[in-house]
Length: 81
Image 1 (cartoon, helix red, strand yellow):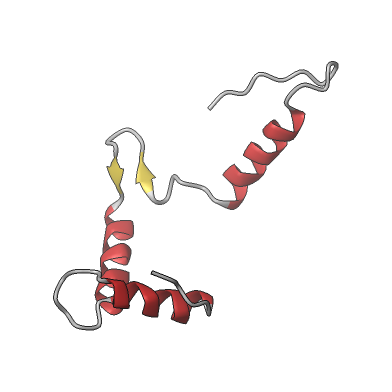
Image 2 (cartoon, helix red, strand yellow):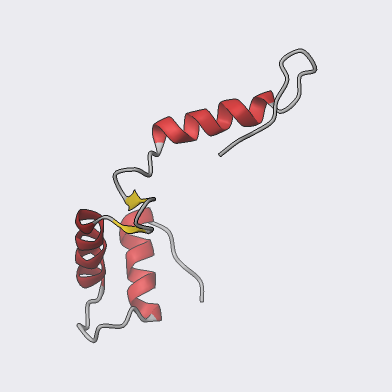
């Protein structure tokens, strides 16, 4: 990622700081292999486990009710259709 900035002209400084902060707080390297262009195996297993936990009826499909239940359980908010 590259952002053109100039402290002298006060150009894009906020964008640079925000990008640096996001990179430190939410690193993608443990999740995604940028060379192979695929998710890392541990992350794939974690996502699959989350999917299986959320798929209450066990049909292998995340239907509307499963999503509503996930939203309610994780974020304590109702998800409208």
